[in-house]
Structures are given as C-alpha cells and as structure tokens.
Image 1 (cartoon, rainbow, N blue to C red):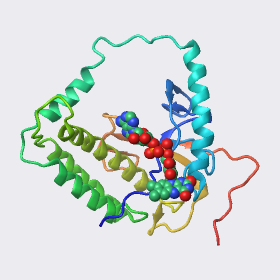
Image 2 (cartoon, rainbow, N blue to C red):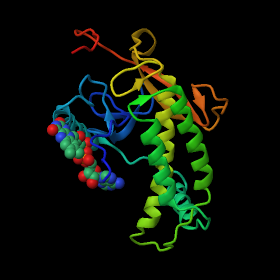
Image 3 (cartoon, rainbow, N blue to C red):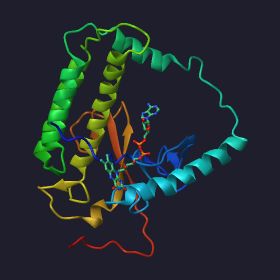
Length: 243
Ligand SMILES: Cc1cc2nc3c(=O)[nH]c(=O)nc-3n(C[C@H](O)[C@H](O)[C@H](O)COP(=O)(O)OP(=O)(O)OC[C@H]3O[C@@H](n4cnc5c(N)ncnc54)[C@H](O)[C@@H]3O)c2cc1C
C-alpha cells in the first residue's frame, strides 16, 4: 500500500478571470485554468480544507464564461513555420531511446526522494539532496529505453514523456522551496520555522531560462530563474495562524 496524493496545489498563475498569466501582468491569450492546476491568488481558492469544491464551482464557472466570451471575438493566431516540430522531436527522442535506463525505475527513485526530502517538513539539506538527485536523474533520463516503438496507444512512450515533465516540475518546486527561507502553509522549513511576511509575503514565480547560470545561487539554479509576484490583500489583514 502506498498513500496517493489527496490534492495537487497547482501553480499555474491566473487572474480572477482565470486567464493564465505568463508573467505578473501579461495573460496568455485564450488559455484558462481553474481548479487544482490553478493558482488564482484569492485566499482560500487553492488549498484550505473543504474549499476545493467551492473553488472549482466558482472559478470553473468563471472560466467557462470568460472562455466563451473570448471565443466570440478571438481570431486564429498565426502559426509558426512548423508548429508540430517541438512535439514531434520530443516524442521521437523518447521513442528512439535505446539506452540502459528504465523509466519506471527513475520515476520510483524520484518519488522516493520527493517523499523523503521534499515533503511538508523540509530543510536546506534535504532540498539540496533532492536537487542533487534530480541532476543525476536528468543524466540518466538521457539514456532511457522505451521498449514499445509503436505510434498508437503507446503508454510506454507516454510515461517516458511524462517523466521528463515530472523531473522539470520537481526541480521548479524544490528550487522555490529552497529559496523560501520561512514556513507558511504546506511548506514547513524546519531550519526556518517562522512565517516571515516581511521577506516572503509574495508569490514565487519560476521561469524556464536556459541562460540562468547554474551557479548554485538560490535564485537561479540550472535553467530556472525565480522571481516574485506581489500578494494583494485588502480588507482582511493576514494574521498569525493559531489554534
Ligand atoms: C479522496 C479525496 C477526497 C476529497 N475530498 C474533498 C472534500 O471533502 N472537499 C473538497 O473541497 N475537496 C475534496 N477533494 C479535492 C477535490 O475533490 C479536488 O480538488 C477536485 O475535484 C479537483 O477538481 P479539478 O477539476 O481541479 O481536477 P480533476 O477533477 O482532477 O479534473 C481534471 C480532469 O482532467 C483530465 N485530464 C488530465 N490530463 C488530461 C489530458 N492530458 N487531456 C485531457 N484531459 C486530461 C482528468 O481525466 C480529469 O477529468 C478530495 C480529493 C480526493 C482525492
């Protein structure tokens, strides 16, 4: 028996119209997110006990209305020269993988280290351990072996591609957790047990940036650049959480 995930605190930033943000101010035209995948930045509309179903009712409805409005006037956007190139290449690389590494084995080891070192209670040491592990998984991922070479209903291939995404996402989450030297919500840093509103009352934003130097600084680790987005609060001031 293994406990399964109860809830994914998704991190796709959106505004209150559920439009996906590509940075603090710019929306991605025509892309909407609501529910577990989204971070709408309205207090409670992500993870507080019970709130998830309210969240999907409210923001799912808003997403439907906003998407229908958008569709009324949206024009087709111009496509790049070879729009499928990225995906074809991604699939070909995975499908032609003929190395000595098994996808299921790397995924299991990723789960193990995330479970042991990137669970709710973390320290800089455990987070750095995860980053070292991910770096070695990324190396091994280059040598995966996908046995099913078929082009239809290829679950072997699907899992291989998915693992690439999991590695990327695990790294983003860990880098953000390492940078956040405080404890808040589902992120408890045993080496920084207090909430620090002065430094961290803000959202963590992570950008894929191939030019970000892998210099080990918390803000920029191997292809990920971290930035922040302000937290806006109005009538209700944040208080210390106590029971
Ligand atoms: C055991 C359990 C108990 C819970 N109890 C409560 C509770 O008491 N109160 C509460 O508020 N919340 C509760 N939750 C949480 C709540 O049920 C979920 O957060 C909510 O249902 C998530 O809705 P969603 O629409 O964001 O995601 P989902 O319901 O997961 O919907 C995502 C959909 O996308 C589909 N999909 C995935 N990938 C693709 C793809 N590539 N292409 C097309 N489709 C895709 C999936 O098949 C799925 O239908 C509970 C969750 C669990 C697991």
